[in-house]
Length: 373
Image 1 (cartoon, rainbow, N blue to C red):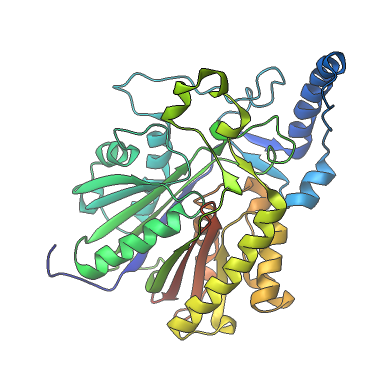
Image 2: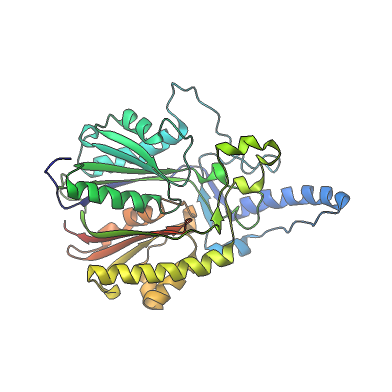
């Protein structure tokens, strides 16, 4: 640790959305073709039949019209329903690191820095391609950043938790410029044969640079006035994928090794918790809900966002919540940062904005930002 602690500032952001796009009609056609084949098998065995899906149900349940993914042909193949993402040689840049680098370069440039001026890289997302070596270290090497790097996983709250940590490190002088990189490949860990979850998620990579000084004039900069994190254990959003799966071969590929959730419980419990946590957070910071110009919330579900805002303030306040999930889906950890990146210029200098994520754990991360340039 050194003695150069500074006020943490969000200096730059970068977002990379993959080209492949899947609209609801395409996803439904693939899913229903799978259901038709599977139900013929089930009729013979006496198993319960599966229910088909439709685009109206998806839009009503989530607010999602389309999602972007790294590779769509494998997902839309009813006989496969998993993206085609071939292995690469160990010497080659991994798929997830490559995805992260794409948004990281944009964020570093937006901050007016060179990669070597970054002295800490945190790769924060709900799913990492491997346990080790850390994806963050691979990203650090590919970019040419200095210092150290590591991975962080707190599900959909990973990015805000990493930003909270980055802010404390800049404030204490433990780091000067921190890159928080969130390359989320949800399509690789999603059960596209599960009617309740197959339509929710998409792939996206977002990055944030947090430091103690602004290097690039003309681009918005935000002081991190206050940040905090909250957790409370729950299994209502869960993935049992892990290295111990191989010790019980018959269960290694069961559906619980992918994303599962008890939707009605998650909705009720997370919204209530987020309402309590955000209220207490803003009270501690001495800022009223009505003072927040933009609420950059986790893009989980349109009903969840609207319900939370009604509890926090009023129906009218939902106009202050940028929505990105309609066209890219719930992209897990980077969702709130994508909303921030797209609308940060809408906050006037001196105005406040709130970044808040919520997800599995349960976990909630909050950052109060004040535009300073």
